[in-house]
Image 1: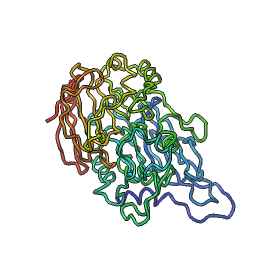
Image 2 (image 1 turned 90 degrees about the vertical axis):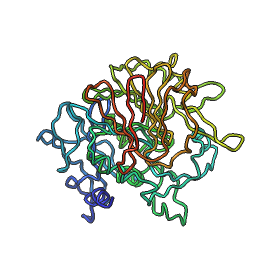
Image 3 (image 1 turned 120 degrees about the vertical axis):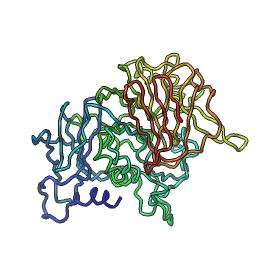
Image 4 (image 1 turned 90 degrees about the horizontal axis):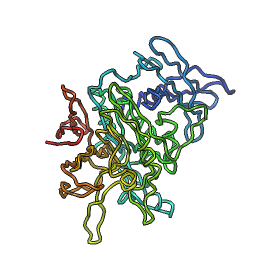
Length: 448
């Protein structure tokens, strides 16, 4: 962890300098990484602004031994005193490096996919206003909680990232929710003492870029947007740093309420990313506002074996307090279910990966629709455990045929079979100890 932090902040600060504004030599970036989007693989570099008298400059990027100029995506401001630079890598690039640091590129063959989500350290005070209550109406039991960000046993994202980096997956799929430090740490709380909060670079660095550093160096990422990255919450940081779409000349890129669906092709595998960050989990009496999502489902062009990645699960289970004082099952997500015609996903979608619920779930269904994985156990404070069996539970016009759940932090590694006819999803704890494995087929998942 200390080495990662030193790499993240040590070479990036610029001290001193002349009294007048001057152009600087390109600085070593605080982070250099690759996010995958609809246009291809996007290389990014984050350069802290350093001394006010120095104008930060984008570093050069070397692609296949040729030096190239990176484009400015965002200039420093008060909340984000960083220069964000980007370069769209050409398809088939064999090598790329920024400041001597090699970048991980998409591979011609997929042998492993690491997937997880909901990784930030929760710092959230109780609802203090009607606006807060409305914003969090779909997040039962999630307010008034402060995780021990300074304790890796309680918030293990950094060691988990290092563990996953050690197995060098070909691609990382983060199913959303990166930043959870939304309220200041209470005075006297040693568990989060010194932590930043809010949608700013200091918090994004503490909650994501510092702990994720070794894994950002190890593999390209599919960085799905979560409900913590909506425009009302931490959407500015997501738009600047993780949205894979090119800046397009607008400085900085604006937060968008709903990002259009896009596809990412890695080797022979297609991923379609659906922005469900603002899709209400429960619908009011007037009905769900499902039209925008129905339109996106209709536009999807899946090829055989496509995986759909969306933060909120289309079919998932959590629990909520019941009138009797216990807990009862709650179905997620009513808006996305209402957007589907007869409960059917587009043809050729074989699997759905999501997060949002802070548990691990693997579900397959009686009508043979694609299985659903819920991978929200990535380090954010866990939800209440589901104790009852999910098999036979009605959901989305069908019933659950098989189910597995787990209530521990961890990540999932997907690996293809030798025949290529199915995948194995192995669930590991944050230290890399295997918990169990599942056989994943187009209409069924079975876990041992």
